Length: 125
Image 1 (cartoon, helix red, strand yellow):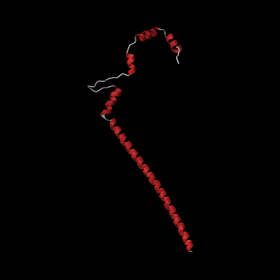
Image 2 (cartoon, rainbow, N blue to C red; image 1 turned 90 degrees about the vertical axis):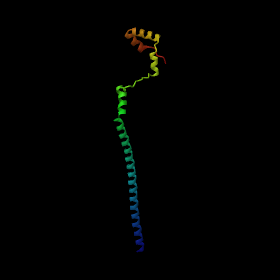
Image 3 (cartoon, rainbow, N blue to C red; image 1 turned 120 degrees about the vertical axis):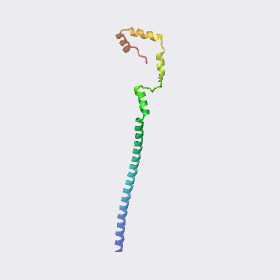
Image 4 (cartoon, one colour; image 1 turned 45 degrees about the vertical axis):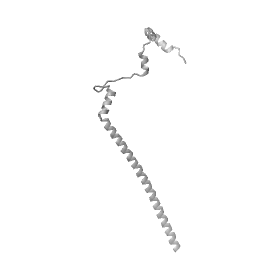
């Protein structure tokens, strides 16, 4: 009889231990989900702050002025605009008489000769 009570007590303790371990596993999973959701909420808060900063900048006078200058080519009163040409465009400004003569001769040629020269000129590799 004592032996049966001991076995019954061991079985009950085993079931209780199994139940407790199962609940602990669920608790850890829930805590992990909570931590993940909190991190996600923090990221969303950061994104919201960045977006609100961007919205306030887009509505600012500075942004409107930059866009007016870039897209509408406007300038502020008393402001002068300087355009800096790329290096390659300087070569186009300098006039070469020999090139000008060749260009004038090519322009004088009939159109069919220009097309023949374009398609059948010798290619150097």
